[in-house]
Length: 126
Image 1 (cartoon, rainbow, N blue to C red):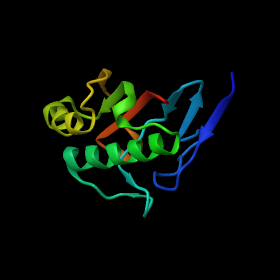
Image 2 (cartoon, rainbow, N blue to C red):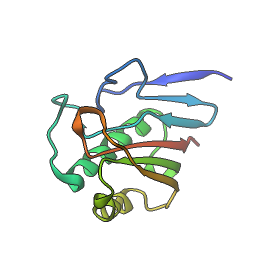
Image 3 (cartoon, one colour):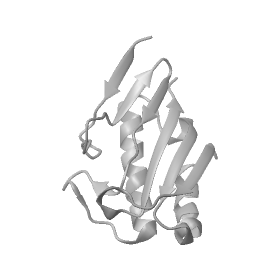
Image 4 (tube, helix red, strand yellow):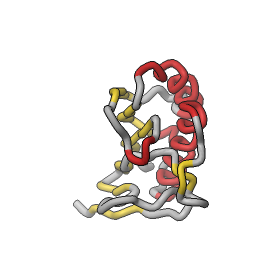
């Protein structure tokens, strides 16, 4: 099976030795996205709601570059710096993932750049 790397300037550059996403068969696997503004390369959003919004926009851009979109996500893995943010995170998440994909959500002791949330996805491509 051929595996293709995905790259878009509409999402943050990878901050390590990885791709924004890879396509394998009819599936796209995104790397975890954090609340980096791709225009500036900085984390500008404050608070869990604003950071979740930026994460979802970043994921949408990566999925679009791969030929998919948020409606085709079948699985997410979500990392929260503080489970006390769970309800506020869910409120924003639910607006972007209306199809209710399978999901894991765990607390992480620390996330890159001190962010509050990171999300990765698996989606299909038509």
